[in-house]
Every structure is written in C-alpha cells, then in structure tokens.
Amino acid sequence: MANVPHKQEKSLSGVSGDRRFQLLVEAVRDYAIYLLDADGHVASWNSGAQRFKGYIADEILGSHFSRFYTEEDRAEGVPWRALRIAAEEGKFEAEGWRVRKDGSNFWASVVIDPIRDEDGVLLGYAKITRDMTERRRAQQELDAAREELAQAQKMEAVGRLTGGVAHDFNNLLTVIRSSADLLRRPGLAEEKRERYLDAIVDTADRAAQLTSQLLAFARRQPLQSEAFSVAERLGRLKQILATTLGAPVKLEVDVPEDAGAIFADPNQFDTAILNMAINARDAMPEGGRLRIAAEEATGAARQEGFVAVSIGDSGCGMDADTVNRIFEPFFTTKEAGKGTGLGLSQVYGFAKQSGGEIAVESRPGAGTTFTLHLPRADGRAPVRAQESEALQEELPQRRILVVEDNLTVGEFAKALLAELGQQVSWAGDAPSAIAMIEGNPEEYDLVFSDVVMPGTNGIELAQMIRARWPELPVVLTSGYSHVLAEQGSHGFELLRKPYSIDGLAGILRHRTRRSAAEA
Image 1: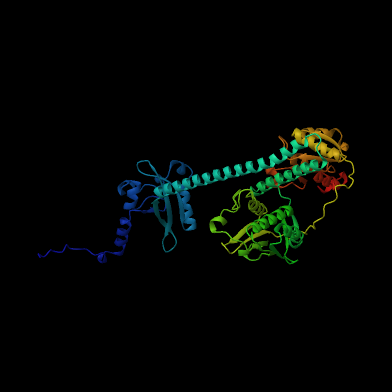
Image 2: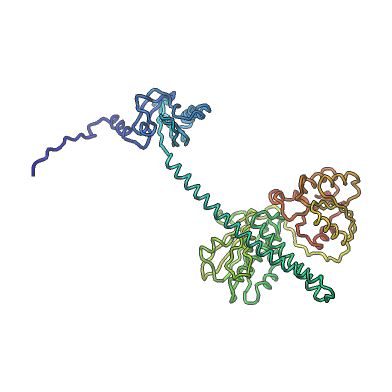
C-alpha cells in the first residue's frame, strides 16, 4: 500500500487564550454573541449574528444596537431601558420582536450582561441573542391545538349538560302536568285529589333541588354561609343518613365534639353529605360500611385553616379514569333512571364556592373516600340549629310591598301573602317601588323584592331603602343572580326561589319594622 503523506494539522494548544476565545465565539452559529460599548454601539460581531440578523461585520460595527429593535420599541425607549437595567441590576433578560437587515421580524431571546473593570467602571456590555421564532411558532400552534381541544370538550360537556337537564325536567314536568290534568276531572275522590297534589308538591321540590345542584356545580348558587359545629350538624344528620342508607349498610359517625366549626352554607353542607352518602350506598349493593369522620386539618399538605370531613365506604371502588370524571355534570356509572349524575357535581361546586376543596381516593375493590376541606370558622360563634316553627302559628298582619317584574310570579306572591292574612301592594320595578314608598313611607311594614330586575336590581333597591328609610326591612328573593353569587346579599335576608308558603311564613314571623335596624 502506498504511503499517503499526512496533511499537516494545526493544534489549538499553540493559540493564545484570547485567540481561542475569539475562535469559539466566531464558531457559534446558533447565537448572536457580540460586544457593545458603554453607549450601546456594536464593538464585535460573530457568525451567528450574521446568520440570522443578515449583517456582515463591516456593515454593523460602530452602529448603535437599537437598529435591531422595532420602530415602536425604539419610540418607547426599550433599547436604552435594557442597558440601564443591565447596568443597575447586573443582568437584563427578555423576549421580543427584533428586525433583520431585510426588514423582516424575528422573535428573539436576549441576555445583556454589563462588563466592568477591576475598579467597577462600566466598559460595555456582552449581548447574547437567540432566534426563537420557530420555537415560538410551534408553541403557538400547540396552544391553539389545546384551545381547540378544550373548546371541543367544553361543547361536548354543554351538550351533555343541556340534554341531561332537558331529559330530567321533561320527566318532572310530565308528572306535574299529568297531576294537574287529573285534578281537573269532575267528581274526583278526595283521596286521589290529595295524592295528585302531593305529587305536584314533591315534583316541584325535586325540580328545585335539580336547579340548586346545577347552580352549585356552576358555582353560581348564592350561599348563605354561617358558622356551625361540624359535630352538631352531622349528629342531626345521623338519623336521616341511617334511613337513607338502609339496614345493609353499617353507618359509623366518628366526629368528636371538638372537631371544630365550619363557615359555610349549612343546608348545602347537608345536601353534599347526603349526596356523597347516597353515592356510597349505590357502590355497596350488597351492603357494607360507611364511615364519616371529621377533624381540624393541620399542616400544608392537609389544608391548614380548614376542617376535613371525610366519607369512606367499603364499596366497589373506581378506576383512575372514572375518578377523573366523577365531578362532571351528568356523568354517572349508574343504570339509566338510577341517578341524575349531579350529586357529586353539587358537592364539587359547593366545596369550590365555599372556598374549600374536595379530594377523592379510590381503587377498584378497595372502596372510596371523599374528603371535604371547608374553611374553619375562626372567631365566629357557631349558630345552633333551630327547629322550624309550626305553620299553624298565627301571623301578625303586616303591610307588604312586593316588588316583582314578572307578572305571573308577582300575582302568585300576592296571592300567597294574602292567604297568610297580609295586606299586599305590588310594584313592577324599583323606580315604581321608590315612588310608592315616597308617597307614604308609613304605609309599609316590609318590602319583599326580587333581585333580578331590569334597570335597578333588587340589591340596589334594598340599599336605597336602607339609606333613606333605615327602619323599613327588606327581604330579597331570587332563584339565581350573578350579583348574589359573587357579592352575597349585602346583609339583607334572602328567600330562595322557588319559595313555598312555609318559607314566606317563616320570613314574616321574625321580620318587623321595629327589627329592621339590624339589616
């Protein structure tokens, strides 16, 4: 084999340190690495800068680096602000649009470091720029794809929600309409009359509960929060829970008296506990054990400042995919007709709207435990639950101004109050109500106003009355209001729609002109 003469090679070992560094900087093509003098003029230029900025060294050396910025950034002083920050803070980092020689823009990641001598005197700046245009475009495309997916999932959920609501409400309306038609039949026996009336009342209550669950999931249910003892509340629920669960399920309530107090809506709390208990019962068709426990949560991992209420069952458990979906509205693993799929949605919405959290642990065959973390009632005295008063208790007659823009609801409210022996006037909107009160403030003992009305809403009306006639009490009523959900009732008593004659009677029992100063 013929000898091939070796090509003479040069070694970097014989090159000075400064020259080696210069060769390194010039060899980097993915970054623009160059020096600026203390005023921001370009003092060096590498091949990376030439590659994506388009200038050769002779074209750019001595020029001010602000020429790489957009006209808008130069007008706002961005280049000079970058140098000032680098000099004052020791480094400047940012991303933004920069301009190539041909006038096109590219998205750049920029780092500027000050260069000082041994006495701390500023000599200039080292500037490193990287072209991030392609990466930014890829990220934007990924974000757009995620947004499209999220929108598609949202529309799927809305469709599922709408279909579920329509199905359930049509079922409820069928019962109400059929019962009403049967009540019209002549010669109807009193026993059947009572049965159909009970069906209408029960179905209306179920419809109201369905609406409440929807609003709780959407975090739009106006809550009436108060401090209450966890032990007392769960103690009152124990008998109801035992009846609901049935004999095959052994109920254990392990809640010490010092478990703490919660600040939340007690009625929504009861509903959440019942919903979780019913869900647990259905997961144990052959019977099992349900344990309810409560304790003050401590430590960051356990929601410090909260009370933890857990409900654990010995049922069939759930796999990870099911756990990830259980709080979706109308998602259910039960057979058709065995559940609305809104129970756990209500629990989720109640927890979130109360400023708390809901956690779930479950494995197939190993049961499920739900844990509610609800705000502790620091500094608030728990309100003891009171038994409801008898409807038959005689009510004092009062002069009531009903403010309701809906003709049908207004007439119905008048009829209910008249049935309770009250003297009733009616205003269709807030301005009319103010005018009626101005005409004779002593004419009314109480104002009963809807919240959602065109123009001036019920809360604004109540605040006007409080300011001008502080001794005239105002009671608000609403099925849903974003103002109530976001801001609360501003200290005014609230009766939720749909209200019953019992609810109205309860309001009238303790609301008088003389007690209005507390509102």
